[in-house]
Length: 376
Image 1 (cartoon, rainbow, N blue to C red):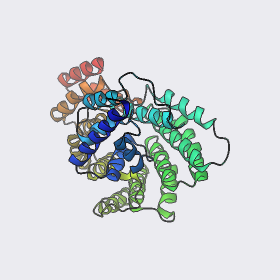
Image 2: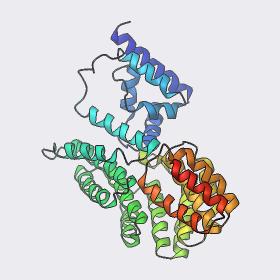
Image 3: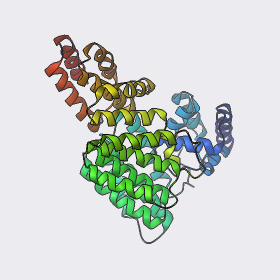
Image 4: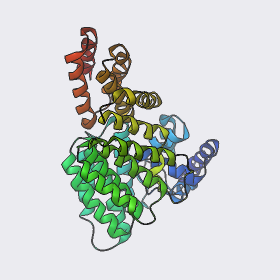
C-alpha cells in the first residue's frame, strides 16, 4: 500500500467514526475545540484529515475522547498512515508545528495539570511573538491564541502574575487582529484569575466590559455572569451574586446560537452548578453549596485536572460542615488522581483543606488524609 492509499484509508476511518458518532464535520470541530481549549480548529481542517491531506498529531487524544475510541488504536492507525516512523510530510504549513504543540500542551494539562508544561508554552509564545513582523491579522490572531494558552497554563501552575501579564498582551494582539471571540475568551480568563486571586473589583470591571459590549453572543454573556457572580460573592454581596447566577442558569435553557464561539461549548448545567456551589462557599454557606458541588463531583470521571478540582470542592464543603464520615469518600477518591495531576493552583487549595482535616477532624480521618498526601 503506497503513502497516498494509507492516508486515504485513515481518512475513511475517521469519516466512519464521525458518522458513527452522529456528528457533522463542523460539530466535530466544535467539540474538539471544547475538549482542547483551542478556538481555531475548523471544519476545513477536519475535512483535510478525512481526505488524507493531513494526519492529526496532537489532536489524536481529543479525537479519541470525542469519538469514543481507544487512543492507542487511533494512534496506531495514524502511525500507519504516516508510514510508521517515516519523515514528516514536506508540505506542512508554517504554523502547523505550533498548532500541534499547543494542542499537545493543552491535552497534557487536561490530563495532568499545567505545572510541567507551562514553561514550554511560554517558550512557544515568546518565540512566535518574536516572529511578528507587521500587521498580518491572521498571524496576530494565531500568536494571540498561543498567548491565551500560555496564560491559562501559567494560571494552572499558580504563576498568577505571569499569567495576567501574558493574557493582557495576548488580548492586545487579539484586538489588533480584530478577533472578537478570542478577545472575549481572553477577557474571561483574566476575570477567572482575578476571582481566583481575590481581585473582585478587577473581575467585575472585566465582566461589565463583556456584558455591555456590542454583539456579544448569549453564551459569552452567560460566562460573564458566572464570573460576575463569583466576584460579587467575594465582595460579600449575596443577593446580587445569586441573582447573576439565576440569570446564567436561565440562559442555559436557551438553545445554542450559531454565533456562539466554539470555546463556550464547555458551559453546561454541571459547570454552572459547580460555580453556584463555589459562590455559596465564598458566601460562607457550605450547607447550601454542598448539593451543587456533589453533583459536579459525581459528573466528573476523567481522572484528570477537572475531576481533581470538582472532587476537592466537594471535600472542602464537607470539611467546612464537619461532615467527617461523608468526607471520607471524596478524600479517598483524590488519592489516585494526586499521583497523576500536578496543578499547583488546585494543590494550594488541597493543602488548606488537609490542614483543616488535620486540625479539626477525628484521628481516623486525619490519618487517612496524611496517607493520601504522602502518596501524592
